[in-house]
Image 1 (cartoon, rainbow, N blue to C red):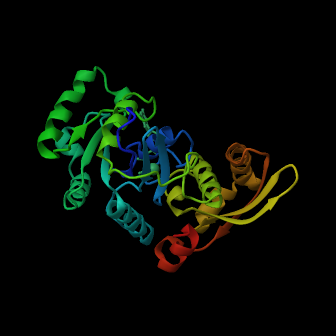
Image 2 (tube, rainbow, N blue to C red):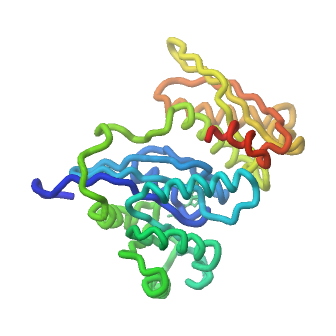
Image 3 (cartoon, helix red, strand yellow):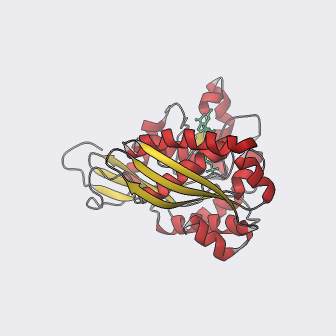
Length: 305
Ligand SMILES: Nc1nc2c(ncn2[C@@H]2O[C@H](COP(=O)(O)OP(=O)(O)OP(=O)(O)O)[C@@H](O)[C@H]2O)c(=O)[nH]1
Ligand SMILES: [Mg+2]
């Protein structure tokens, strides 16, 4: 957005797509801060995460959403609720679908992505499509059948192939998105990055480390609660509990002689010092709440939604 006489634009962009498409990686790149957690495990993002893209003449509130999937547990259902809430308030939809691998366009856009596209269509807002992970597509001509198929079947207002990881295509995507926002004065202070409280970002950083270090079903059964927070003169001490829903998962997370929880603590402490901009000490506990992912009241309590 350049040119002194152009009107200021301000609005919301919902970043949507199937799990693992690179939505959170893109949000972090656009905001320039690791706000939303990124892991190789599908269904990492659970909440609506808002990051603010600041450009001369425009502000876009980018809403990262949980990957769209068919809900199986109470937690899944809440994740879809978070997605629907983001669709409700958005001015523009940005759909991310991975272009990596050998699946045909029809396979990529089969269920659950087709169901997501249906959900978007009914709302009459502009849809921009960004095929992602193009660093894995060589030669680039291999993108053409996908772009051709989607322009006929999904009919976005524009398509921009991107790599959230390398940044390839991301500036072009911003140039396409900002003019689609409604005119309006700035809604955020120039240095605002997010509307999520620091406590939430801290809990998510810890969950990111746990998710990266554990496998199978464990990441999906983990919640992190920040219990206490002491600002010391030189360091911040954070007391947090990692909640799991099965005895076997507790055994994995504690590890032999406490090795796993200790390793998580060391890695998370470094990430938290980074986030807080001062030394952080972390006291971590592992607690069993059997079956919490299936209990609506517990899910709300433990995920803070
Ligand atoms: N090669 C490659 N990998 C990427 C790219 N973007 C993201 N990834 C990786 O893909 C995985 C998933 O990325 P996320 O950003 O967490 O994906 P997401 O869409 O937010 O996933 P959910 O929150 O589970 O819905 C991570 O391991 C990322 O590092 C990309 O452009 N290229
Ligand atoms: Mg995510």
